[in-house]
Image: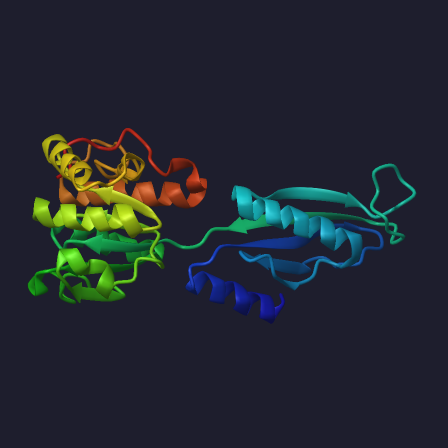
Length: 272
């Protein structure tokens, strides 16, 4: 195993960046890249490592770019005999199988509100190696005693949350606050500036009130439509711990299914 590739893969994971890993997993006869040879492609299309160079590598780079777009990998077979129909322009004479693996960036979650649901979510996130920060305007609700696994614990007013916490690095924001007015302030900020997925814990009446207020403030309808509310996957969750499980399940689904579930339906009723 190439130490450079291992170190780069770890660096990309720590920086919450997705990448594609292509590896030679089977060879027959003479081939340019030996068994186990690997190449990484970063989000910007740059690469490190090699699967053998020449036409084979260009084909694999194209596959890697597609995998970055679709979030899907696959197993691909190549014939390196240019005299065979369908063979690559190569005189090596062998055959090679390349496994292309899409490695999703790890979620980084921002929690607004340090209440019971947020505390339960904060206990589960580290078990999946998902980084998170928590913010509240009440210092006693974001202490290390409640959120020992958090990267950041911020005491900040709702209306200036993004002045203290840059939203750009976060993939998910869950608004789990205790005050509908402050939740609305954070949700307005999120609709206008948060790049990732946004969830609001709410009953049907709270959701209707908050969304109506957002419209009154001029938030575009398409931005409001991005908001997941209620939050989580429908499992009949009622207690804070159960709602936390449903939220984590939602995040896991996002990781594995990519952008296709930006605004899923069928979330558990009654959270809020």
